[in-house]
Amino acid sequence: IRISSVSDPSIQDTSEGNFAISALPPPLAIGSISATPSSGISNWNPVTIQAGANHSGSWSGTIHHPSGAQIGTLAGGTGSAYSAAWAPPAAQNFCGSGFYAVVQVTAGGEIQTATITFAVENYPAKVGQVSLVNDALQPIANPQAGQAFYVVAVIGNNSTGALSCFSPLTVGNSYIGAGAGTIQPGQQLSFFVRC
Image (cartoon, rainbow, N blue to C red; front, side):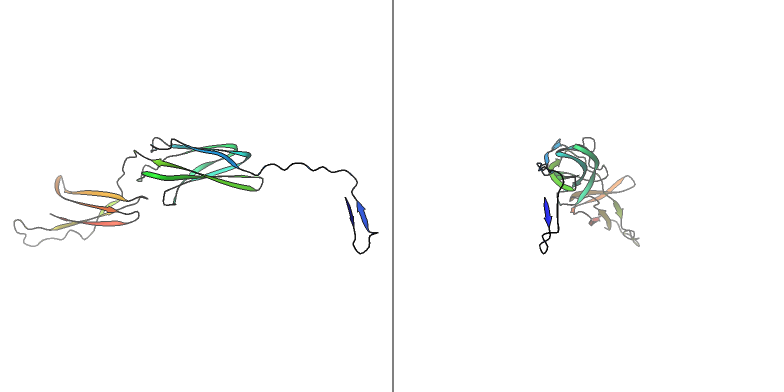
């Protein structure tokens, strides 16, 4: 290789040795990804996410609700093969299809991602936060036989999916009524039960 000045060709230099042109390695790619099992996942039956890349690198992964919200993190790893497990947390309600894992590998300054979907089924329902409105119970002056009153119960949904609720109310061991409804994630619903 010779490098010379355009304005003064006498100023130049030539490489002292030979050079070689070699093939570049193929771009980083995730060649395979799987979720086992793809359904029936529960707190005691976790899903295992496995992936493989054509280069050795650093792995990470996240778990997402069908809405797109991130609900979990997969353990990191290194090498050309990756394996990590995730189970729905026992304290929340998870059920349905469309859950997915996003796996990422970084190698040689390149980053690649892959996605695999799975379903959470046969997962036991969990009770969310339940509380009574503090001032819901008011004293009744001179109550009459057969007189009705109302109790207010507020149910909060701490999960990522809608909950269909049926809330029986008791005083001591005596059943006094029930309320029903659907609560969206992050919302609260008041039940006015006639007693």
